[in-house]
Image 1 (cartoon, rainbow, N blue to C red):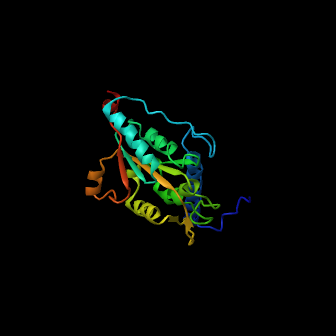
Image 2: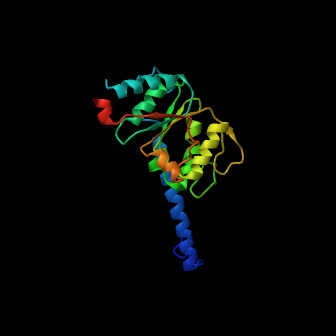
Image 3: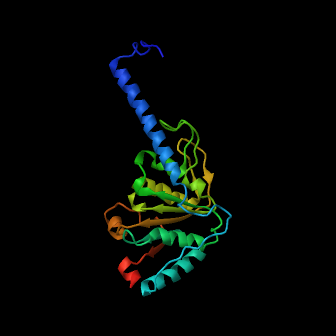
Length: 227
């Protein structure tokens, strides 16, 4: 690199170049960080023997929950798991997946609360090279990774209404579009979503779409489940 290589640029142009480079680096680092969240920690690899998640507790609430998990797992409905923080919503999702016909296929995990808005759509649906600053190659999203399996969206209430609308379309029609691509891709994915919010209040406040899920599944609070 020559010492006077950038002398032809004005200070304003150099600031713009620096901002673009910083944006590209930031997006690339975010994508690299999010790639480590593809699957739930400790999940069995596809087509290996499935290790059943044990739901511990003998309270009426927990007994009822186990029965509902068994019923819901046998179907292919998309499920919303609601409950306070620390009540084991992730365990419920794993139990549903492991007892379902999709158990031999991946259970892919995405924490929506830790998902930056700038890369949220790409993380869900993937992107093609050049779709945005920092998109240096084609990349599959979580829906493609979970094809024929299950996608667990933790803290779904944190997603924007715009992304909720795109998710609803995927659930209705079974196709996705990578960011920057005009082509549609067919996917076969069961969605399990979790939230600690009061969704009735969220719907009334206009922050959550009432038609997003098919079957609500309530997780009992720790006190009720442990009794």
